[in-house]
Length: 84
Image (cartoon, rainbow, N blue to C red; front, side):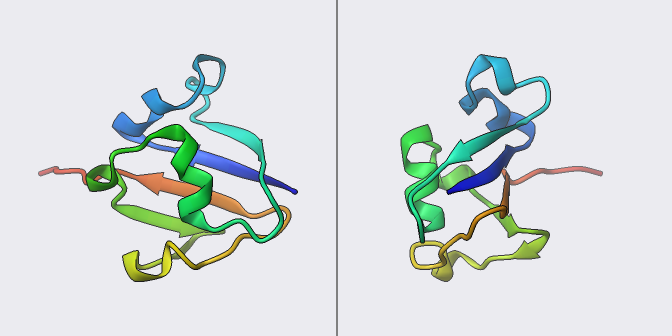
């Protein structure tokens, strides 16, 4: 099944080089893949996986290992960001 995978800020460097400019890529994943299964091959440091959204809806940390995706979902991840 196909989803859209987006990484923001410093996490963009974990995308293949061809997709870094737009910070997103189409991604083929297994049916009913979990968030954790999707991000595992990208070797994201878990301390940097801060804000996780599926189709714009927040997914709390305790649900990320079990929350599954469906065809067409958009999975977006942000690292912790400080600002002022």
